[in-house]
Amino acid sequence: MDIFKIIDKFQQIDGDAVGRLEYASRRHFMNRIGSKLALTAIPMAFAAVVNKAFAQSAGAIDVLNYALTLEYLEDEFYKGGLAAANLIPASDKTIFMQIGKHESQHVAFLVKALGAKAIAKPTFDFTYNGAFADVFSNYKTFVTVSSALEDTGVRAYKGQAGALIADPQILEYALQVHSVEARHAAVARRLAATLLGMPAMKGWITGNEGAVPPIYAGEDNMTQGGVNLKGLASKTDAAITEAFDEPLTKEAVLAIAGPFIKS
Amino acid sequence: MHTNTKYRSGKEDEGASLVNRRLFLRSAGLTTAMGTIVIAAGCTKEDHPIPGTGDAVDLGSGDIGVLNYAYALEQLEAAFYAKVVDSPYSGMTDAEKMILTDIRDHEIIHREFFKAALADKAIKGLTPNFDGIDFTSRAAVLGAAKLFEDTGVAAYNGAGRLIKDPNYLLLAGKIVSVEARHAAVIRDLINPKSGDFAGDDILDMNGMDKAVAPADILSAVKGYVKDTINGANVGK
Image 1 (cartoon, rainbow over the protein chains, first blue to last red):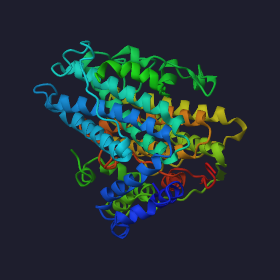
Image 2 (image 1 turned 90 degrees about the horizontal axis):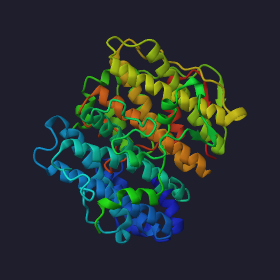
Image 3 (image 1 turned 90 degrees about the vertical axis):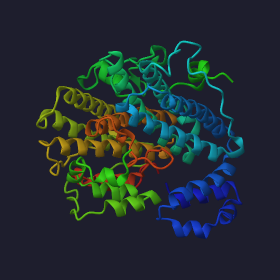
Image 4 (image 1 turned 135 degrees about the vertical axis):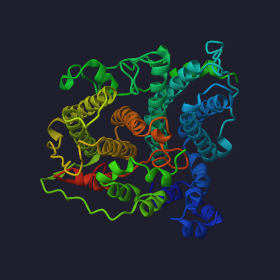
């Protein structure tokens, strides 16, 4: 991230950006670049500026609030799982602590960036109207839902890339979160494959293989860039579908996530 | 939880240093304040890599440049995994072989896809240089794989903002998440059941992956390719 280029860009949109950065003690901020403190100082001062600039781009705000909804959902899901007694075995606790930490960080980042425009956290029902009634008492169910949420998150972020093409810095942040969701998904899928006895389920998505089949609709797509890749490099259909992850529209994602969201 | 320091003192670091970790960290870190710290922490007395000694290759400009950039990186990844699968390290388990073969196939598919999509605008086939990688050693191979996958993720993330055509942006998005899945699985092979699959050594304090500009990525990988790649106009 070239922070100075970004500040210049926001200065064009928001004439007072540097003035407010000054308020956040620009000299102090500059002195600390390269020190560990800069790691937190930059995002905080930066978020204040970003927030103003965002006001210029209603589309970006919608995308970020949509992302925030999903991150709230994931964050609360892992908080619930980690708090439940005798749910996650000790051997897997580190994995879910790491995933949960990232979801909390994503929420914090988005809330800070959106400022007053951030939506409030919804109320969730992780039983999905009873379909996952034992989600916080049966580890298999918990891992099933985890893999489904992560894979859906990957599809959701991917589906918004085009909507952010005019906001390069926000696009970049979204991409940086997107690939982290994919890292989570790969590990959650491998845990689910073992627990559920689904050896065909790998860290990558073969055809539309997954623990909750409906959310993988379209993952078996063979056509990329307008060309059917069947037989490419003499590889199998399975390998070709694994090599490309597929997006979902906001409508499709909200239809999937809807039953988790009470209000 | 593994901190940077703890991670670096781990055994798997041997593999990573064999493929010249320092170069990657130095180059990939150039653009961020985080990088500055990483540079200091990652500094060792390793030699500079062998510079490209083959042909000069220009990736071109605009979206074609970005696609050629991706094609170049996929060529290196595909060649690496082809060699890994052809000459397995000692003690490679069946499960590991299956994973590495899957990844090889994905990278070959990515490579061939870009080659076909670029048609007469595609750069030539590159000549990789993996002399520094000990393919008989599990630690060296998985360390190199981790480096290539993390680099691929950072490269695609950094290239996104350079793409003008939304169809190409979506294609890059379809591929980068697969690279991220690879990175997570390779990291889990190296350090199972840890937090390393999305480790604190690679993510920032906002829980985000790196996004690195082409110039820095090309500088980081130049030790692995004999050709001299010019990416100055990628996305411009």
